[in-house]
Length: 187
Image (cartoon, rainbow, N blue to C red; front, side, top):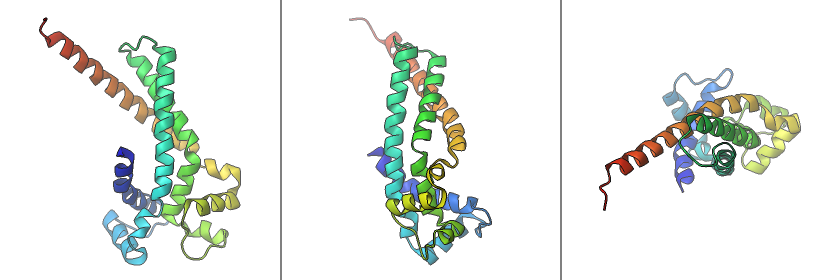
């Protein structure tokens, strides 16, 4: 449920960010981008990739959590507070999840940006919609390697993010649990 709500809010933000990052983007500010997209494409442009976003984030989170737990069992079987194991497991879990879901991210980016050159090369007039069409277009333009464009950048972005997130989570879990145990009165 958290992913559904998160993506409902973040999908429009992702559309704006990606359109502003495009080479030769006509948008000079986020507000101008929002206005232009709203005026020229309507509300649906902000949610064109919503199902793809969900299709990416749900497996990402599943792979991420399962991998973290598996790695913790390997490097920290007693589950004690061990910052090094949390950083390593968190970083690797994020890297694996990011790499595994990169094809979905590539398709989501194409849906969000409606990149003109790509659509022209694929002989698509108008707007590209739907995950299946995005998958076909990526394959038509670049074959299997097209699904992994940007995988290194995505992994490099996710590794420190997930390593920091897990280490902070585990620290506060340890701190709050230890503090709670220290302040309890004996029965």
